[in-house]
Length: 283
Image (cartoon, rainbow, N blue to C red):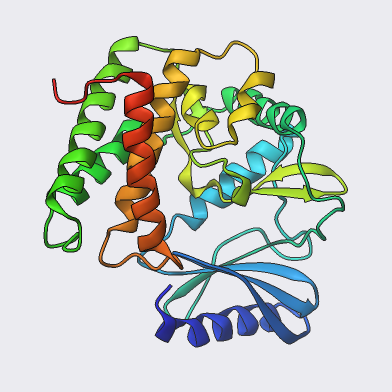
């Protein structure tokens, strides 16, 4: 979120919770990306705040409710208030349960795989309209193609990302793998370690695709404990995901701390992975 918007976003969360009868004396910023994640105290509520024009909060709330009904491992909405999107001062605010981090916080690959498998099982029961994961690949391709939106991207790196995205999009599509509803970005930053076990958050990235696309976001050893993985497809999805997240870091509007440094590191990693796998992306 733009730094200039943060104070207003915090004020919107504070006033929303207060209007619902919750006491807010302190606000702790837990995460700042495209939306702001806040812990409100002493009511101890997790608030997620996003600009009205840049959010899918209603979809996320409805999906979280339906997944909770099937006992899928997802974070719960705040039970003391109506589960809906609250709009205030140009922002949307959603209120969620705050989970105290469990100790130890290290997650075993087997537990990670088990939780992701349970999430996928719950998602297979749902029929909801969501984007296809290839739609997100296409968004990355448009970003790479736009020198105006990625002005700092060197020509050789632009060619690498463009060729990688185009080639792997074709190769993965040709595999014709089974597809289902996915989390979209089940990386460790979207997994909470709680006394109730592992819980997934940030459902706004949900899409349809093969489970290997989700596994590509998780630590590598997680896939060893997930049944029925197509290892070839997984390797391709991992490089595809690297190309996508590297592309986002070169967006002129990207606000991730150390984003350019990460983007440079991921470009080197893509080159190394392509060499290791012997993939020709120029065909």
